[in-house]
Image (tube, rainbow, N blue to C red):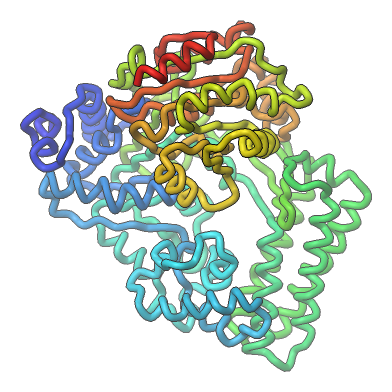
Length: 633
């Protein structure tokens, strides 16, 4: 396998522009050894290592069933359609490959049929999109909704015509034989390499998907890219959640069953309407949107308590009414089971005395989430690994804190794993400059966004845009964008005004834009060349001290005799910062300036931990020096 990465090896011969890298070869060799020894391996591969090829080559050479999991559906599609075919062709790989997504990513023909029959209650615009989906359904071979052009991924039509773990009819479905999920799983069962994502993997391993059993086949080798996301995603699936969307979808399906299958039961419509009303009423009782709060505190408020009792009553009514019509409609039978499931979840969430969990809620303008999340997933994940014998490989560009991997390995229960840290091959000393400006406004200071925008405008203008401004809060993001739009003639793009993919396309095609964004642009974004040569971060990405999950984990750390700030808050902030910083230098020819607008990097003792974890770029406190560096492009 070593020869595959040599100057005259298989990759160099077949892939245009492939450059051998020693760190990439070392990573591939370590993975090959881990597969041979069936031992867990954790690899931090600095940006530019080429970790995708480094794990694909030993995976394809392993002669084993390999499951590769990525951090998002976008990365999953990229890996399957771009990287995997290139490496497979270079190695002349003869095995089969498959792409497998969660149930809600595939068109459900039965739900499409039901929605078409009950279309009278659907808004006109959504009805038009429903017609488009119906036309597409006769053409698609895989049912992957990402391939339906003309309808946005966030369109309200998709929840109507896709299924979830909760509402899938499984083998009772009249169109089971034509089901796109069944076809995708059969292909995955027959494949040697299966590409999934972390959410699907954990839902499948932990929740044990209903319907027709587990989606993901058993593998001999499991490889997790963007593994730094795993602890937080795992905590979601090892806990419990009930959302407003769950309840509104249940109400909608009961209405649909009444309009299509059980037209003589007006109680179905009445109970569904009651559930919709009580769900919306409970959302209002929770208070202001855009806030994550402590569920224990919320449930102690009389208004929330009353609203929750009424919501539970409405859910019980739906359960009892659906029970009277059991056997008359497959859709209604599934709704009955979901009503029972949601009541059980609600009962569990109301029992806020259980220790070892954080109880929290979150709401936006229309929806809410009620959740309990375990404070640690290490024991449970260790159990999952023990149940699935084989080789487990975890890799990311951001796993270490202060040159140590124990923060990640401890959280995931990987104490016995081999670890490897590989430095980036990029020459940060000449390709980049880190600036922490002087005279910054204090965090939370009134008018801080305006002051920050005016301070940094000379840099942005001198660079002709080509800038990401990454923020730690939506409010700061909106305030900065408003100030830039009032003062700059350059294009100013704002996260949320259109989809992530469209925003990136606009940024690249403009060539002189400023993109103001928050969390979702801190990672998984790859813009190479002069189009992006300045990344500005508003402050160190510490989680809000009011976040109930952070509070609970900090209290748990304190009870164990630890230092919550040093052991919980700093490591998480360091990894988040490393992700944001990683947007700047994406290739050996890239040059750029990173500006972090937080005095604490140089005034607080813990600033040294952050700086030590960042790439070894020259540092300055002078914005003029940053402008001069950019001018020497």
